[in-house]
Length: 54
Figure 1: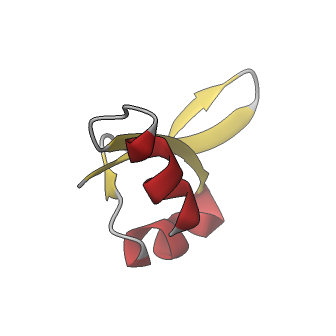
Figure 2 (figure 1 turned 60 degrees about the vertical axis):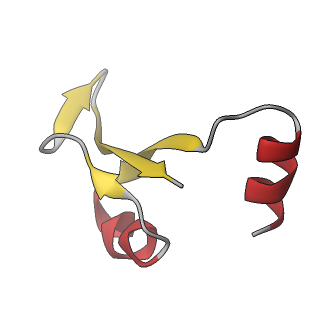
């Protein structure tokens, strides 16, 4: 992934986080992200916090 390479080149230690839409969970899982908690709702938006550690 280009973003991974660019981020690590800029000093990111290899930890990436996203707030996945509920229906996008399988996509992020295919990239290696792991859910950090169950579905949450904030301001009427449902998401799942996820993290990828290289």
